[in-house]
Length: 150
Image (cartoon, rainbow, N blue to C red; front, side, top):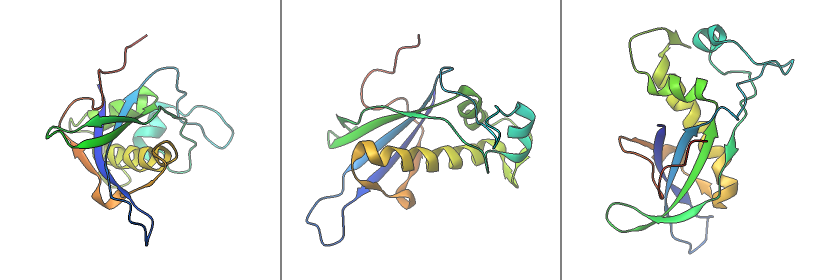
């Protein structure tokens, strides 16, 4: 399980390049470290639930960008961004609970993970991504079979 965000590339100004649809799969794996404080120590769940990830180092990994098609057959790009499960699970769990930075916890984490994922996926996609056009999809993994758990 994870999140899928849809956005578009931003062609360089003055370029004849066409904007392309991009799916960013936010997935999780235990091999990716938990968020770290300035002392490079993993932060506890209590910190994540009260203060979020502001001022923390958030380890992640970005997979290779690959060609895929959207539901209408239009060509698109898919890329995976992998976070520690403690973050993705907070974004998925929309049960009533604590707020973080004045937002419902799951919405706070969806926004933060989307921002981090898009920023870090740009290098793999080799284009700027439009954060204003970013939309959370209510669908499963895009761009092939879901990654195998190991």
